[in-house]
Length: 105
Image (cartoon, rainbow, N blue to C red; front, side, top):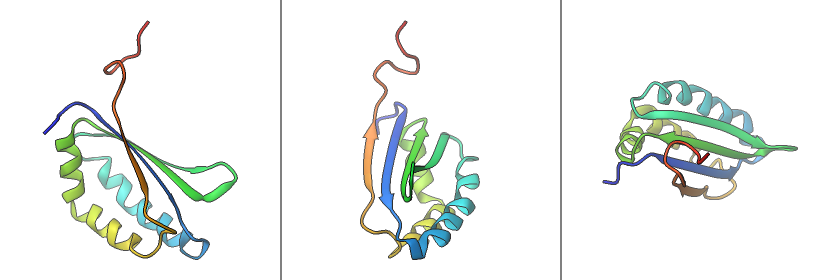
């Protein structure tokens, strides 16, 4: 597996009737995920003026760290809680740093 740092961007919309439930599921899972070795950051955000449009930005130290994250019981519980509660499939973008871990001078 490729073990350079992994950046992920998830974008999805939550129908209003599921908004509270989806937010609660993320609030339960995120603190646990942030304690994982290799999980460097998770930023749950919403698009300004559109609280149903979520954008999550995640940073993992490697693909292996992300694979470990995806296998955890709380991650699986989160995915089960989201089943049928999104307006459509999430758009997932895998990103790579242009300049390693620091930007050029």
